Length: 385
Image 1 (cartoon, rainbow, N blue to C red):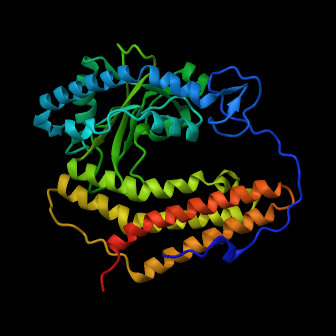
Image 2 (image 1 turned 90 degrees about the vertical axis):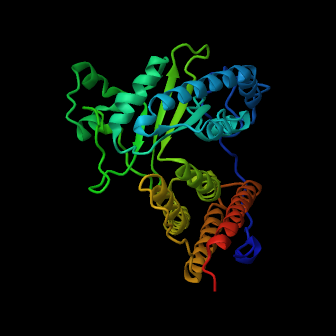
Image 3 (image 1 turned 180 degrees about the horizontal axis):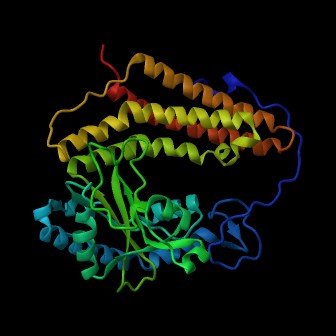
């Protein structure tokens, strides 16, 4: 899979200079003497590096967070042991391998989201063999966690969203506010005739968002420990069907999702698609690359894992990417690069030359890195002659 080098596609023409306006950045709760010089927390403001301040705050309580994670593991282990009769299980070794998000990962997430609230700083995975029976979650798992002072965090859900999916009748105060307090639970499961969701509590259907486009299914819960010394520190709980599904999740996340989500980190991705046809085209090619990989690899990985954990069927659908699909993927990448370069060429007259060139080279470098990382995955699954 070879993408032509940037100078083989186009060159950057002479660009007229103009002054750049100041960029704004999220408010991190710090008093600054002026706007940040870039849209990332790693730049100076008022003589202080914002990232250093945030990182220092994270480092100062990191040991305590690890201790709280260990306590969380103890509770989940006890809950699983008590509920093994309904096929709830807990692999402590698996959860402990990544129970506390590293400071580097937290910083990266803050930079991407612009929010200091990182909902998965402490995280764990619980297995429920039949997650479609939601009575196991709401009538057994959650009450056990609440007995140990772990309660679902609360979020505001728009009234329209709640009433659209349930027979819930909002109070006058909720109508006036425009939202209803709901537990922070995202039920990302299919709800089909063959695999219907049952046991959904009254008024909670709005928590069901459906499986992800790549076929991935889980339940995500944000919990708050009432006794936590760190205010608003959330504990993430991921519920999966079993260990095979966990393996598929880890592989797909690292090799597919972890790569294609970087398309959203391109500089061009911050430009509204309605403002430039080349931006729209670049966005479309990024989506086509993502969908092809989801259809050919991701969905089959999750389906095979589900067969084992949920259906007890130890048969796997072979994953074979044909030469035609590989060629199509190649063409998508080449077309994506061309659209990106056309966009930067189109803003030559309104941006400084050095600025445009820097942004262009960074975007092309990112695209080629995504391409190279995906090449090994394609090599693994391509149809053998």
